[in-house]
Image (cartoon, rainbow, N blue to C red; front, top):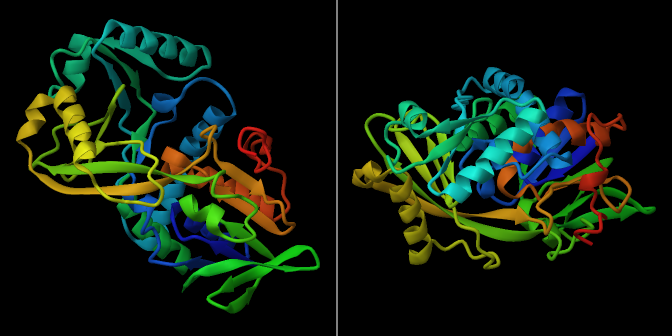
Length: 366
């Protein structure tokens, strides 16, 4: 079976790897280098519990992907020979106001009722875990099963793993899907026809710009997120730390990511003074002592946004076409489960989770 995947980010490469391991002949078409867009601009947070708004299909999807992550990392590292900085070290969501602490208390209670590991910590316990945090913290929700991965290392290793599993990578601009007898039959790459038995569109924020994808630019649109990276000789934090305003993500080598903004400015990826100000204010609120660290990099990425903030997964409107987009903030987290579900859909196997909540024709985005 020949499959073309449009988009070489973390989702496209993960889908290609899974299908290739299942025996399909996969070609990934990417206009730039694999992972050049949102996958490399992300923070790499693996935090379904820290970011969950409540029980439901999305939390189930995220928890399934977190469950798959250790094996996914093992597979990618074994194939590529590279480490990806996987750190299941837990996540803290801190509170600086009583209202915030009460919201965290309710979240912890809800998640514990669902059988998930979560606890509400007081100030002393929080500072015992992370002494660099602001002593003004009132408490935090601790999610010990959440964590992070170095998304740039992951992307490099994943693209190499896919290539070693037999995936072919091709540079070019996809002008649209090819249709023969009412079915997807490949893609047009810069005027050349690339035939396939199935096409998976995993083009992130650009999905709606791929003619024939079945999604419009209104259904999946770019959401700009700005980020800042700082550096210290030794890590100042051990865990991802959230507040109501943003997050800090430590790396094992001492680098620290701070983010992020949420802006709708089309495909503009500029880093702005206002964006930097907001992120640095967040940093100083969470951990004032980090103000002495040098800023070594700043950037912006475009995340694929849907109105209900749920991804679009499964069959597309054209038979033989499939969609894997709209992951918004959770593309890195959801890569393993997306690969699993899309491989099942392409190969005609029963899905491991219901796909109806993530269909392209659901009322929330049509």
